[in-house]
Length: 481
Image (cartoon, rainbow, N blue to C red; front, side, top):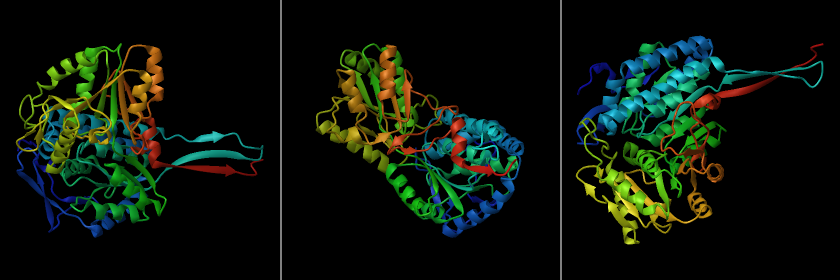
């Protein structure tokens, strides 16, 4: 493996500042060639309890650090991540599959959350509110929630951790991270760097496991854990929410998506093609904010498809460490089968294949374009999570808004147009937590990331992100004069 700092490639769980080697392990494989990368400690519920105990003890220390002190340690961690960006990206590519340059982009994007919240730690402001009488004074302060359970997915195994852990630590909380069993190595590499950064023992804990359900239940059922932050599928998110309800835990859920991408008649077609390509095929389509349904006005339908097809047919798939590769393998066999079945269902019901449409050797599907899609096909309501572009034709603004909103999901949406009146109307009418206007990429640390409807609730990133990890306390001062 071309990793300069071999100590970043850890296989033990990280609990209370110690590396925990378990007799029972699970295997982590490279999705490109199914070569085993590592045997990782398979934690059980008792290990989770140990992590909770450690985080509880550390909370008494960490929450009492000044904001400046927490900020400095977070900044140390950020700088270490940036110093080791190539090694971290290499680890990410071999366990997740995305091309190396894209992995480097993820590491830098993830690090930006640590940098951002290192600064936000110093900006947790309260209020002084005019009292109801001269005898009273009202003050409001914000305090850390407590222990956070963070359950993260495989598609962004570094950034989804930093996006949760950064604001939690800045607020004064301690964290227990349960990474995906497909991509634990990125989480453990971050833990190694956090150890070097100077965090007290128990502030950051990484519980690796093959039994995600059992560890998740340990986090949701323990009263010492005050908040759960989960990124993953909507069905699992509902389970997490139900399990957390018994103790009325604070919960942030970032779940599935079914993003529309609308191109109106007056749009810049070349820009729309480029934006759609970026949104649809980033990470091989395996992101929750990927374009899922492409709606083209009938007047520009054929022109868009021709230009889009030329771009898609040139995509190079392969091993993420090979030069020029734009799309790596899918994460596992089930993901491939699901998307092949979506293609088969659509074509059996009248969809036309413009590009791709076939499975390739290994965990690959050809980058695919399907047109003549309608709402009777499974692909209309399913989160594709793969390199398949499904295209629809529309006639009017009202028609496309109605169809675009006809989904249980409400995470991301995109559209291209030039008429500023139309832009305002459409942006306000789309029932999604995020709207990309004349852009296919909108994730940034400065903006609040999150959805509505069955895509979840709560926001990550931006000035709003740290509020998810704080309690508001109102103090009423009586008999002041």
